[in-house]
Image 1 (cartoon, rainbow, N blue to C red):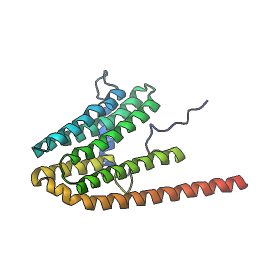
Image 2: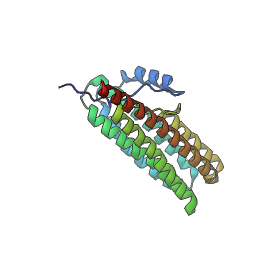
Image 3: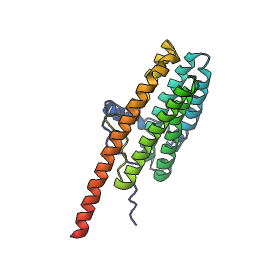
Image 4: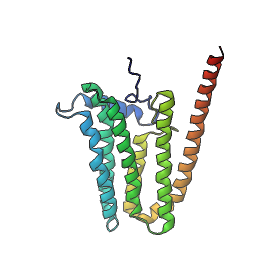
Amino acid sequence: MTDSFTGDKKAPMVSPLAAVERWFIQYWTLRFPPWIEGHHLTLLTIPWTVGLVLFGWLARGNPHWLWLSSLMLLLQWFTDGFDGALGRLLDRGLRKWGYHMDHFLDFLFMSAIFIGYLFLVEGLGPRLMLVFLMLLYGAMMVNSFLEFGVTNQFKITYLGLGPTEVRLLFIILNTLIIFFGACLLVAVLPWALVVFAVSLAVIVYQTQKAMWVLDMADKEKNRE
């Protein structure tokens, strides 16, 4: 029986940093110590997630704790980028486990970013906007998983951006909050909500349109 699972193979990434990231991962994967395996890196997302929530909570009194939140983003980019590459290099056979745990923990990590920001704002309005932003970002991830279920191609870049660029945007936002205060976050939230909502609408429209084409093609084959 042929194993048709392809969740361990992402569709080619189309984003500004994709080429540099690809070269960096290919170069350093062969240089990892032999005792480090892909699933070790996958599970490191757990402490990075806890760190995001903790440092967001501590940043209530001192925004400089957000430097460590940004470090969590950087470390999670590193381990998330290398876990799959290292798993394929060592051929440990954890393709399905890796797909499941990697992306489940990715969801928890991205949710923790918004939870960390919840500690920095006051009032029902800003907090509700952060919750809605978290839901919208989660919906984008769900769209990616559903698209994979239909096409067997795992796509993680949309509208010219991928997870690396998104992490970089959050690091920039952390830096701005450190220097200008949480009032900047409150001012950005309405605009971010509009951007996320429009982006999700465009992504879902493009995805359903592609699914429709696939259905019509299958329909034509069945008529033959």
